[in-house]
Image 1 (tube, rainbow, N blue to C red):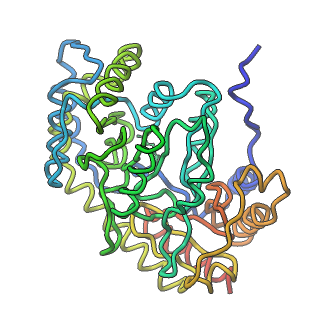
Image 2: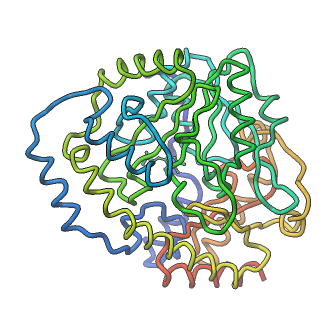
Length: 411
Ligand SMILES: Cc1ncc(COP(=O)(O)O)c(C=O)c1O
């Protein structure tokens, strides 16, 4: 009766079961998996948000597959603030970045075609590709001698096939927290142009650097390949519930024009970006500084606490809303040399991989013994090692207590 696009095992995993059990017994969980900024105790300017949306609630319906022109102008102004020129006619508004991925996969891929995604990566990619009947080919980020995660171009070359239609990179990576460097962006651009495939750059966390390191922005840089940059209010303003994101299409004129026309057809079929939020975009962007400052302060503050508690177990992220904890002795002591590469999560699980099981067992013990919930590394398909991923968004009272318990657990 149902399509084979959804082969997923939908039963709750062991962590969810233990969590439910502890909660049923009235035990408070120290939750470090928070990804939702609206539940992080931030001070949102609710009146200003409501006022911005109420103006749009009075607007007539004026459908345009690319979104309202005033919205695209507001998005262009956001990039102009960072010295980038982007063109309003090269944008499509969507309800979310996730939806934007779906539209791109439908435009670029036939069933059975492939996209290459940099791993570790956030788990949604498995679902996004499966729902479009597209195959996911992982390539790897590897750690440099300085402890940064950078693209392994040999692994990317090895992942490319006749059926590859796009290379995806998240900038900065979720969960590794590494920013794309300008030499990497240039290489990706040349590689995609050379193979006649598209480059998709997800920049949802770009506004959240956590240090002084260098970072290269895809949007507004041009290049030789057909390039799509994704972003949206979900992370830029910490307002995922407003549902406004976009695809910026750049690159050589002919494929760019063709891509824009094809995206028009897909977007016109659904017209999913809502008028009130599109109408409010310019007013909402004026709230950016205040909202981002709070998120940045929260992440920086929590990172400082984690650094003090966890020492060299903590891997310094360059940006984003997460930090990594190195659980294995190997990962911890070998900051100074790249680790051995292993195969993808699917392969490793099929092989009865040890570190995925170790990650899970450790996360289960942390939850049972210390009542601390974190994301085990295997969920993000780390190509190597044993990791835990903690959200830096958590409220300080929860974060400090949870990190102190992780430190105790590690001791
Ligand atoms: C890297 C990355 N891209 C995209 C998304 C999805 O964002 P949206 O709410 O716009 O669908 C997420 C969500 O956490 C994410 O981590």
